[in-house]
Length: 176
Image: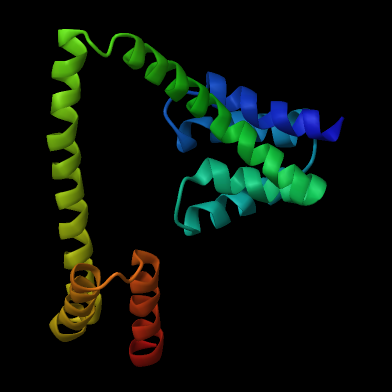
């Protein structure tokens, strides 16, 4: 029964809440604190503060933490699944519709605009990472990490995950 309650406590706010994490936080609080009394308002506020301090979407972090607090690892998995299920279902429905009308001139025109938009977003993300690297590490370390990473990715068959590990190791050994 607790697993079903966990699923509902996170699925319902995510299906009816519009606007992402910050918009559904009060709905989740109503379920977790008000309806099921799994935590106090103070505990929820501390969980929210912890969720805000960590990277990635806040709703999934909170769901994992609260689910684990209530019912261990299975509870965390169920709460996170309930958090992402509404978006996943909507994406599958949208993909089904796009696939059904894939030969439509409008859908083809729309999909031709996706690649340039993604390219611009990726360029912006790259620029912001470079800017942050220059601010925090300086030119020399940013150039070393960027240059060695580019060489490894273009000249060898090294897996990108290992290149990321190289960057982390470099930072931990020489910059930590």
